Image (cartoon, rainbow, N blue to C red):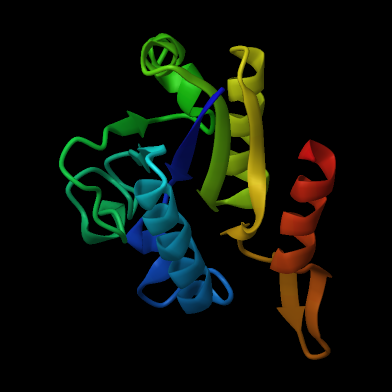
Length: 166
């Protein structure tokens, strides 16, 4: 069984500017460490980059669209326009199989959206796939009022994805 690391939407919109995900610096460092470990261990590292609409901050070519970590030469970047990279790229599963991949570990953003959807897409395509706990993140769900955050914390949303897809 050959394993690949799928790095999902590790883009500036989630790690820079005025609205980064909670704990973004530590999360990015953990993702960087996992990418380096995959490279050292000879695992395939595959990048996913979301293409937002022309009026969105992650529209292709915009600063917030850029990847926050640098793929090495030869590491493939798959662009997507849906939450599930396999839905956006119907040839991706075949390409991964050609590389000998049977198992995928997913890291990146956002836990309950693109990480979850791409994990489910990978499973539907026949791969063993799971998000790596502590290596994906998101924004809190809810609002802030005078008593603080109401709703669900980012950590809880990520934990729910881990529990669902364990």
